[in-house]
Structures are given as structure tokens and as C-alpha cells.
Image (cartoon, rainbow, N blue to C red; front, side, top):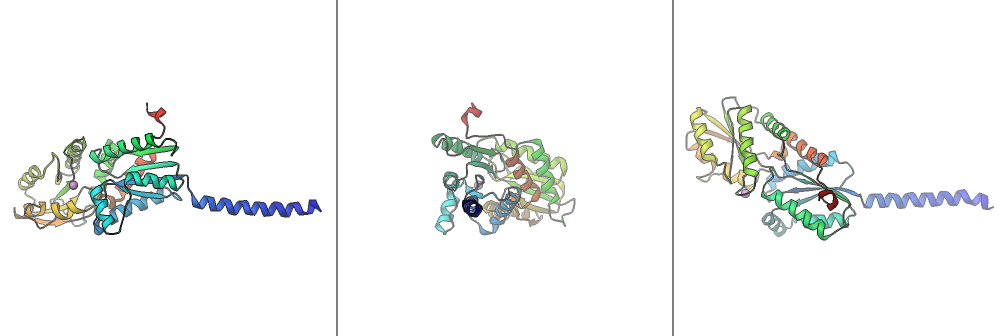
Length: 298
Ligand code: CO
């Protein structure tokens, strides 16, 4: 009798175990990806971030992808509109609550500037004050930190310029720039890299040291008749729509038009360029900065 009942009971326990296991596996993934962007409050700019998110979902199947914005101003605005987005601290709390213990944090900033430095400091402080909350936290660096990144990004941007742009047409890319930190040095180098690949592609920044005046002089001297404008920022947000392509007298579009040049704005963010998405994914995959275990750092 006992021998006959055993297989049935065994099967029952096995199926119960499988159901419980499947439920657990569905409820919590030990691995997660946290994407950290400056953020945008403009609905039209959002596709750039969404497309980066999709690239990460493809690169990390069955892994939750969580978002955080580093800009307090943008998060406040979105919260007021009923569209809250996590801060980095809130996102880390959320990941921990969801049972994520191995986390890949990827910065979606363009260069190692103020925003990234803040992210780095915040992560280290968070992990120090919450020991054991995560097993591993890897930090992937911003878009541009190696010569390979520079080559990949410059090639990807040039390959994605509007199809009807002729070789003699100028292209002006608007980077952000920083008043402090090494971001401006990176962007100055990026400007040179574009010039090396295509003499008619210029980069200047809306803030920081690489201003537009010098580029405007070069374009006047070049004899170009038409200028394409494009942001060199992850999203085509406020700066792209106003400082670059807006109607105000001091927008770059207005300054170029005042010189009699024909201007066409191509308002796509870097995040919409597949080759750029690939660099962010590569940085997440190749990150060697594991911040959860101080032993490994010091
Ligand atoms: Co700004």
C-alpha cells in the first residue's frame, strides 16, 4: 500500500514545488539593470530614452530594466504632471524591494561630467550606508570615455545624418558642456574627431567652454550655404528645441539665418541612433567598476 501511494505523493509534491518555484522565479529576478539619464520632461524627446531602454531589454532578456533621472528639476516637473520618475536613491530602494541583488547601473550621460560624478558619489554613499543590500553593483560609464567610443559615436552620428545633406552643407551639433569637471575637454576632442572625419561637421556646446561663436566664424568662412542642426545630447529636449532650433534671436538657428544661411533642424537625440545605443550597452556589459564590495575598491 505504502509503495503504491509513494509515487503519487511524490508527483504531487514535485508539481507543488514546480508551481512554487515558477511563482518565485516570476516574482523576483536577482539581476537588474538601472538606467540613469539626466532626464527630460518633453514628451517629444522621450522616444530617445525609450529606444535606449529597448536596446537594453534586448541585450538583457528576462531582466527588469529600471529608470532613474538625475535632474531634480525634471523629476519635480514630471511628478507635478502625474508622471513620477525615480531618483537614483529611490530606484535603488525599488530594486532592493524587488529582490534584485546583482545590479548593472548604466549612466546615460554623454561624458564624465558633473552629473556622472554625482551619480558615482551617490552610489558609493548609498552602498556604504546600506551594506549587504546588494551583492554586486556594477557601474557603466557615460557614452564617451575611450578612443573606441569616440570612433563608434562619430561614425554612428555621421552615418545617421539626413540623407539629403550634400557634402558641402555644414552640420552643427549642439553638445551640452559643463562649467566644471572634465566634460568640456571630452567634447573639445569630439569636435576635433568630427572635423577629422568631415570638415563640414562642427560641434559646439550650449554651456561651458566650447561655445558657438568660433564655429559660427568657421562656417561663415567655409562658404557653406546650408546648415543642418542636430543635438549632440541623448535626448532632443529643451536645449535642442529652444537654444538650438528655436525662434529666439540668440538661438543658433537665428544666428545662422542672420548670416543669410539656409537652416534645417534635425531634432533627434543621440539615444535614437543605434550605434550610440550599442556603445551604452557595451559599457554596461564591460563594466569593471563593482561598487558593492569595498574590498575590491580599496
Ligand atoms: Co542644460
